[in-house]
Amino acid sequence: MDRARPRRCGLRGLWMALACAFAAPAMAACNGLVATGNPEYPPYLWRATPEGNRLVGANAELMQLLSKEIGLPIEVRYVGTWARVQEEARVGRVDLIAGAFFTLPRLDYMDYVYPAFHVTRSVVWMRQSQPFDYQRWQDLQGKSGLSVINNSFGEEFDRYAKEALRISTVASLEQALRMVERGRADYLIYEEGPAQAYIARLNVPGLTAEPTAISNEGLYLTLSHKSACNTPELRARLAKAMYRFERQNVMKKLVEAGVQAWRTQK
Image (cartoon, rainbow, N blue to C red; front, side, top):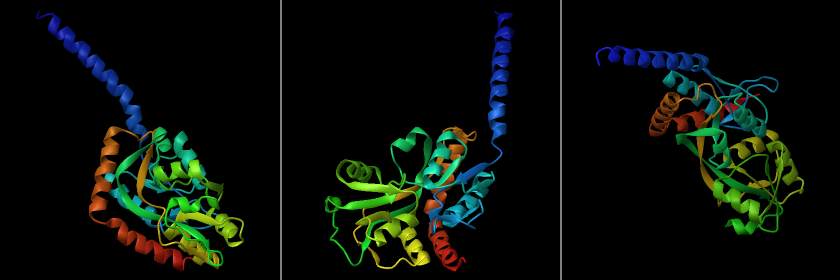
């Protein structure tokens, strides 16, 4: 019995050494994080310059605060359209999406960090010259709608729209706004703040938003399943940081600053 005991300890030590050897590369691979998001999303995110690869706005500032909380650098990078952003997260070429609504399909390729760091309001945009009464989702039936590719407005509305509405998708918010302005669609569904920001910047006349919202959805930080940094330990650190930010109402000041930055940007 006494002779067998050292042997068992030796085997246990060997297994622990092997486990550490395999774990070490994964830990070493996480020297920092790359975050991205919808680049047509002021005051939350937009490109700093038309040719550059840096994103700025309230969500970008939130990522810098998050970086300090978790002790890892976070680069907020432009990678393309919103559809492209989601594909980059799917294949693991970016680690974080700084702002996404919850949908079941997205659970297949990324983890949501709870709680949501902000709540946004999505509305129906239409021409002032040809308004229609909107009070409930059914009021959109029989009309031609628009949205941006891969946009979500909440799991419940997305399901209803797929079953009962006629909504086409286009590549950009600017294209969608211009199409509604020119009468090529009856309405556009988009988040209130970003659409207002683009309408003001592009000087698109004659569009109005209905007071009744389509949905009020939480905006979440997400982490790609294929990120080298995606570990239980990091997910816990991210969740604790987002909980503190939510309790401290951090986004309120960041959004206010984002609105001002968007308005003054040349």
